[in-house]
Image (cartoon, rainbow, N blue to C red; front, side, top):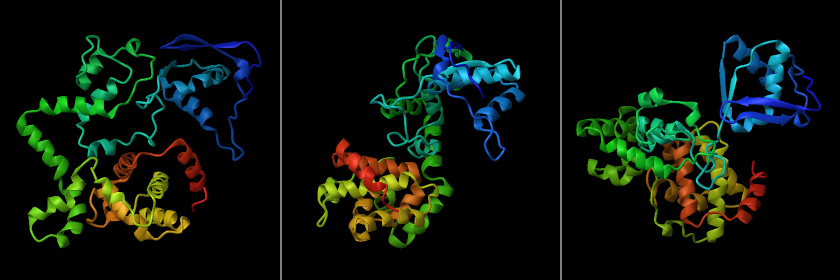
Length: 338
């Protein structure tokens, strides 16, 4: 798609008003790939038009490409939708929200014990506020009061501590009978229990022994003793290196299965010329908070990706975190691990 080489395009943004973007910042846009299929850019515009889309809300990182979007609508002779470029969610350190710093899967927050109502409430407050500025409100109250003009352009901060506070407000407002019912559904639902029971049954002699052995399955984070990470063979730096490399390998794992999880751990220890027995005690401590428990790879599979990676990050923070220099060096090392 040919684009002008001079002048400016005026982008009507519902939040910012008219935004002028020079055409000389735009490259020509590929519309058809060599295999004859349309690119996402072309397919998206055609799909939106055929579906009668009237408003398009995107993250603000897409604002610089808006002139090409507008131009394609003009080439087709179609009315363009109203455009709105929303501010991006940020981590507490103001960096762009990413799953390397904050879990972004809904299932993570479900397993952490957050109420759906509180989660919706908190997300509704990300860059928007009620007319009376109250912090706790229902989805219906948000629908009744929503107005794009109240969206703030300042990058909203996703803070899990603030979310926890808001969730506490919702929990305390529940009738005690409903609180008990929701707790049972969250912790003791049959599907989740059946994943855990086979790994616990053969290790206990009384039901009272289940909680000490498997309580970590029903926790969000764990609080291991830092002494569990003291290693006879590895230095503190090597301990952090092993855990960070395993974490990075797990972040790229697409199929969350026990054998593939073990494959990630195995790849790291072999590359570092270590043995599995050097790494597995570290994994037990980080994932279960204990020196030993049920099979840690079985536990990781049951806990699911985000909660597993969250606990590994917590353990690394407990050990002092990773410096910028270490991060740079270890990322280069990661690239050479199969």
